[in-house]
Image 1 (cartoon, one colour):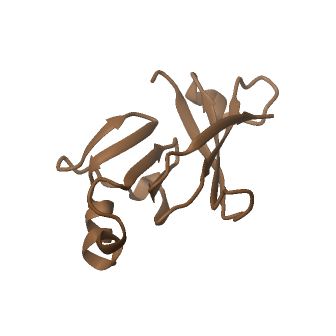
Image 2 (image 1 turned 135 degrees about the vertical axis):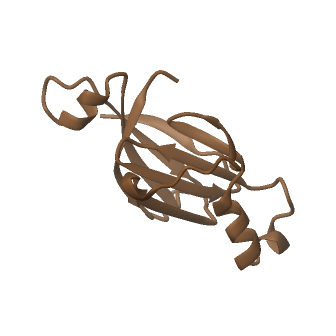
Length: 130
């Protein structure tokens, strides 16, 4: 990817076909994200909208744990093929009865100080905001 992201906010507006809205800041230079909103920072704000979601969580990066058994593609924005979060939902909820295997996706945002994980049937819509 060559870029870094920082977490700004998450909300559940439930309007206009958006049930989950995430705001992140993106930059090629991680220092710009740490000093944002300083006028010298070169940061792009992104809004990531999910039409619907099954589950999500946000965890402060200090408490995340690396797991070699998980499989994903991407860096700052990742898509998991195999994850503990997804397995947890399959074992401890009824999602398999609503969504047969392969119809939902685990998306992950690896931010500088946070990790945001979302399970959704729909791909997110990402737009630049000012």
